[in-house]
Image 1 (cartoon, rainbow, N blue to C red):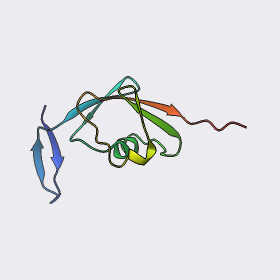
Image 2 (tube, helix red, strand yellow; image 1 turned 90 degrees about the vertical axis):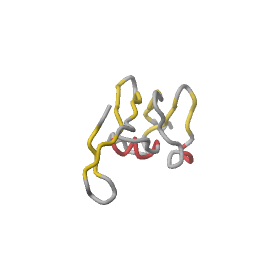
Image 3 (cartoon, rainbow, N blue to C red; image 1 turned 60 degrees about the vertical axis):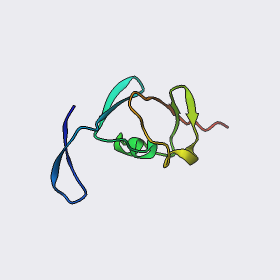
Image 4 (tube, rainbow, N blue to C red; image 1 turned 135 degrees about the vertical axis):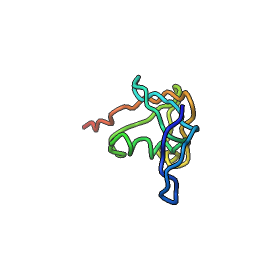
Length: 84
């Protein structure tokens, strides 16, 4: 799969490093591997309102800015609900 992407210099380049992931059973194509935090931001998900699991394993919030999305990853997002 080839996608057109802006590189760091603002020039258009052909990028063949696109990866496909799943977010709550919805297919999402990324132009490159990004962090879990960036994925949530791109999907307009409020970072303080969800818990994340990847391939059946919880991803602690402390790892969101380090954990990279990989080809075929299956992300499940769960709404955080406060109890009382």
